[in-house]
Every structure is written in structure tokens, then in C-alpha cells.
Image (cartoon, rainbow, N blue to C red; front, side, top):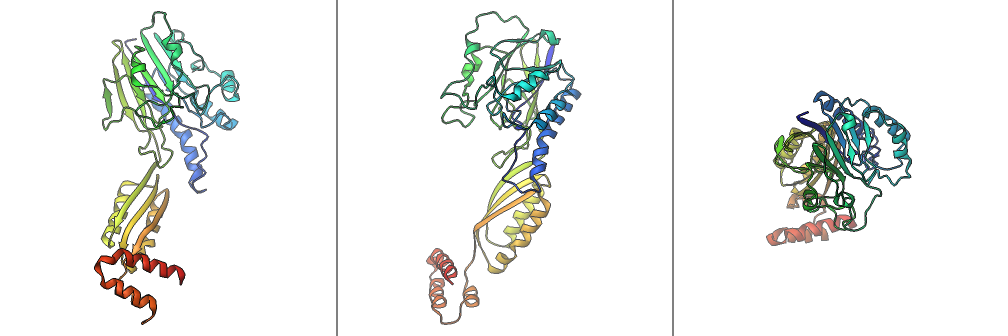
Length: 377
């Protein structure tokens, strides 16, 4: 075998419930995580991948429902390559007790390998001249600054296999948010010093390396990211890698975008109808029925447009999977006509606000005064 082909994914978080979303979209988001796993297995088979690697957090928690465990196992059984490598992450950790991995140990198929031991996994029995060095998670959090790489660092035996691959779950320092260093924090230099051909990581939901290109060369450390976006802080539409490791230890990676749903948190400042319509068109041009959008609007617009903005919201809601607007900072532009319409002539509010209108430098004061008066009416 001159090269080995690998489908690398992780952080599917199957069992995530999406309780912050409405009932009409929540079941679809839950279902999408099973579907993306099935799509990845199908793609791996079509590409004739030798290895399918899940680098942790296949499940969102250790006590995931039994029906979810069975559904996942049935999907994984469809992989036709040499070996499917499954690493416990910090959400679906293996402390030697949890029922989740005891179930999988009982149901292991001929090509499914559970990486839940600090040892070198020799894959020659699977037809691959390859050794795997796992750094799995045995708890949800680690001690500050501690990871599970030490056992690999302390190895003194010679590497006999053609290829050496490390698979780890944890925060990559300088890239993953982990200020307290309690998510099995590791850094590039300590991974590189172990002199393996390739490192496949999980934990951070954003892919590493990040690139606009569809193919990557010259890298030996990869973090797959989540294949199905799972929240407003996930700016990509899902990511995985299809990698090829050749006999010289060189790696070629293809970026895969297998996800269905896209999340977006948007903010605009508007001043007139053209601005509002441009916002609507930009959103509808980029986002679809599989998009979840939160929109924040700021600015000041005339009263008529302020009253008609709901029409735009309704159109966006109709064309998106989920739409939520935040427009508390979108205000009515207070003009003399607005004051005349809302307050009787010669009343204190009318006279007071009219005086503020005359003073061009008091636009902010006018807005605050108008809102306070409306609140107490």
C-alpha cells in the first residue's frame, strides 16, 4: 500500500437537544446530526477511505439515549473501509465505568476500534501498516494544563509501522478558547516533538487549519471541527477532512463541507427604506430554508417605515428555517410631524420636545426625552 486515505471528523455531539430553539426547528436540528454522520460514512465509502476517524465527542454526553446509541452504531456499521477509529472526547469521556462505551465494547464490529486505552494500536490486523497513538479523554475536564499525551512522550520503543498517527481530543493552545486550560490543552510544539506522521484532533468546533482553499498541503496537524453547525457562534456550515498520507509521510488534505444547516448572527445600522430593503435582500441572497438567522438592527428611521418593518420580518421568517430579530436599538426619527401627531398642541410634552427639535445638537436628548415621555403616558 503506497498511501492511506483517511476521513477525519469529530464533535458531532449526537444527543444535543437544541432546547433554545422553537419546536418546529428543534427536531430537524437533532436529526441533522445523524444525517451528517451517515453522509460522511457514504462519502468515505465512495472515496474508498481506509480509515474513518472520529476524534472525540461523537456524543454530546455520556448518558445519551439508548436509541441514539443504536442508531449511531447502525450507521457506523455501514463503513466498508479497513478500520473505523472511535476516540472518547471530553463530552463522551470514558472513565472505565460509563455504560456508553461498555455498550460499544459489546457491539464492536470487525472494523470498529475503540481507542480508550493508553497504548499503541497496531492496525496490521486490519490490513494497514499503521500504528495509532490515542490521547482520549477520561473525564469532562482535565487538571489545569494537563493533557493525555504523557504516555506517548514516555515511549522508548522503536516505531516499526510505516505510518504513525496520533489522535487526540483537547484544546489546541493559541487556537481553541481554553483560558483555564482545563480541556486537555496541548500545543503545536509538543505534538510536533513526538515525530508522528500525522495528528488528528477533535474538540474545537472550528476547523484547523482554516483556509479558503479546498485542498491543503504542508500540514501535519488537523482539527476537523464539527461537520454540522450547532449554534450562532459556529461561523462555518460544517467541516471535515479527507486526507491522504503517502509513503514519504507527506499529507494532502481535501476540505469537506458536509453540513446542512447554517447559523448566522447579523448586525446592521439602517437609516431609511433603502437600507432596510438592502438588508432583506442581502439575507435572502445568502441564506435559505436551511439557515438560522439572528438579526440585530440599529439606527433611526421615520415613523412610517418603523411601523412597516414587520412586513420585512415576516418575509424573512417565511424564507428561513429560523429567524429572530433584535431591534430595541432601532428608533423612530423624531421630527416635528411626529411630535404633532402624538402630543396635543400646547401640552408640556409637545412644547418640551419642540424646543429640543430646534436645537440641532440635542438629537440624542430628544430621543431620550421622547422615549421617557412615551413610557410614562
